[in-house]
Length: 266
Image (tube, rainbow, N blue to C red):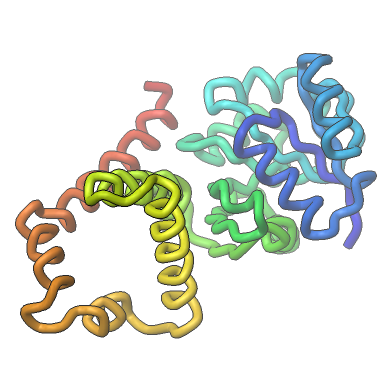
């Protein structure tokens, strides 16, 4: 199915989705950006070869509207758009429920809530999708089809989306934080930053591919690296003493709770 997709608000996540769609083969004439600042419109048009209009103009051109604005901006942005009953609204706003978006729209407009992540930029994204009360099955399928162009997609009940987003939506930041820390560790152990960076980048990339392609449980792969009484076991004992598992649990719970607070306008 060919349709025009408007991305309203092209910040970090909106641009990741935009770039991912184009890299996946979506024709530039089927994607339009909706932004308020003329200089940003010119930048996007030059970089991606797409039409870049004001939000109202972009919405008028599209069958599917992807909202990439901040959660607190969504209702105000929608108030400035003329929404047709058949349009599909896909929200990328963290924490903002489909019910709160539906309340700002004409009755019956389909809303799908999505939490993608920044690897969408290279076609390796993970998008979590939840349908609103008015979203028809074919609209959910359309959202899934769009997002599949930039990575993998999983559909969950909306009650689970904040928890899922705490794992995948923010997950790249956790991985990058670990990568940053391991690079610094390498430097402290006497390596050059360039060598430490290469070691960390390829180790993380290779380990991630092993997880995905072998289908083995992470514990099995970890045990395969860990010889009894060996060097890896010594390092893992430090992680256990520091309570790394509990830290990750606390961090993801804090992420989920903050998402819910944002949804309540706190």
